[in-house]
Amino acid sequence: MSLPLAWSPAVPRGERSDAVARRAAVEPVLALQGIGLRFGGLQVLEGVDLAVQPGEIHALIGPNGAGKSSLLNIISGLYRPSAGRVQLGGQRFRRVPTARLARLGVARSFQNLALFPGLDLRANIALGRVAAERAGLFAQWLGLARARREAAEARQLTEALIQQLGLAEVADRPVATLPYGLKKRVELARALIARPRLLLLDEPLAGVPAEEKPALAALIREARAREGFGVLLIEHDLAWVLALADRLTVLDRGRVIASGAPEAVRQDPAVVAAYLGGGPA
Ligand SMILES: Nc1ncnc2c1ncn2[C@@H]1O[C@H](COP(=O)(O)OP(=O)(O)OP(=O)(O)O)[C@@H](O)[C@H]1O
Image 1: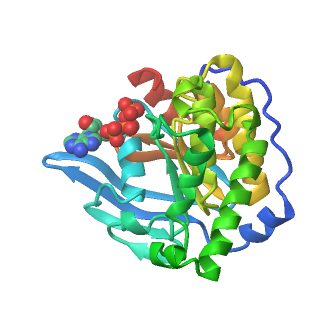
Image 2 (image 1 turned 180 degrees about the vertical axis):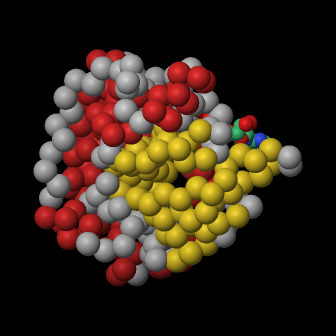
């Protein structure tokens, strides 16, 4: 028996680029060791181990209330785990320093869009670069060489992403006037402009019209192949998870009940039982 799901329409899975293969030889972009989380008497997570390799799209799935968002909040420093360590950018943390996330190579998109509706799309994307800039505001004000170089690079990257994500025709429009599917692309572009090593995506396809999902999923895969970053995503649309992810980790009531390639996980009896018992996530 396997999860009652049809495989999604083909997303080009693509060959992993040489750059991705080279980076795959190095350490994981994210490693969680023995993560536990308690809220009062509620044990939300317990003994969670998980690693994301460079160039890997890793999906975190599980029934409602399994602890997926809490785990993402721990990785981005919003929650402090009650046990375990998070390894990011070669460093191990009990609590990840949120203010240093960009410097640690992490970018995150949110379930509810966090865009500036009055600003045009180009400005929204460029803002994603600010946290990753090395030259401080003072250097920018002084017009120092490094700051000028970074500003030029940010403009180039913005334009490249606008092209790559198919946003050229709407680049000058205020984000508020864009349909939801395009707003999701802007949010993806804003995360990508920081050139992350780890991209955290919270329900990247939620609310996107069905006919636009294949294109958005393909854009995520293409960006990953081009840049070689690792992705950890939460997505409730399981058909798309199976099409997008290279690897799945399944949480149920705060514990990892399965981890592996999508086809193997899909047939795992514990996973089937968790979903059938609790209803699809
Ligand atoms: N800040 C908090 N305070 C208290 N309890 C919390 C907090 N955040 C999460 N929880 C609890 O932790 C458990 C896991 O919630 P979480 O949102 O992480 O699950 P999830 O797998 O993301 O669920 P869903 O798929 O429904 O979004 C739930 O019982 C939730 O009520």
